[in-house]
Image (cartoon, rainbow, N blue to C red; front, top):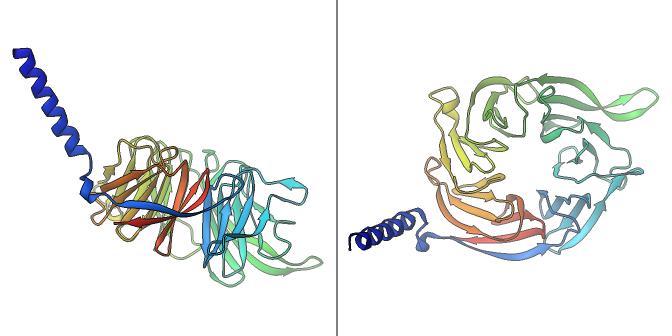
Length: 336
């Protein structure tokens, strides 16, 4: 009789516990996939310029699509006689009409015209993990990039488009710099006058820059559980994806203050976080995506996990969510 009472109590306790952990069904959001851009390779990353999507399509190189018409405009699987090796990142600098991509061996860029990637300019080496490009003046850009090799770390460079005797007009590196931390660098994000860097097992580094292209100055480092792999700076803080340790929100003031941080999605494996207004989209690899209400970023509230396919990262575009998946790039509508 006593054992029966104990078992009943345990069952009731478990129901109460897990009932509290799971989000209220009425508070869940819903998603629907409106269309899928069928890239022939895994869709790993996307950069939007109007309705034009520059897609890093893995082993299929770089693909450029019109989202509305679902027509592929261009595809680049190599440069010269060499193949691209699993393109994972892409960026388009509209001011200078430059396309940047990163594959397994290098970062490279070239002018977006009919000869794209016939003779690109390489940056970095085979250990590159992520990059950001900043430009506010025609014929000049600055690139910051990180390396998983501890000996290389965090680098940056300025490039100008100028006339070179006997060669003609080319992009020339004018200056560069480097910080060698004590851990591999995995991802980075720019916002305001800050650059955040994911430092793998050592958490997150926050740097300030006095102007675009200036030398980053370290504010401090805040440790996280697991490995910090990607970061996303918003107005008041940094969202951090920490693989199988979930995710964090770290207020900007914490880096010069008490070091406080707020962990969430602890039961999920988080590869990337995209943010728009009060919504965060967490890329979960084989589990798809998770959506969170971040009206109070120190207390994110789960609004559902959606198995849309193996998802590498997401990007907000207009009032839709673009999901880079192994099934292609999905255009997802989210309803609250």
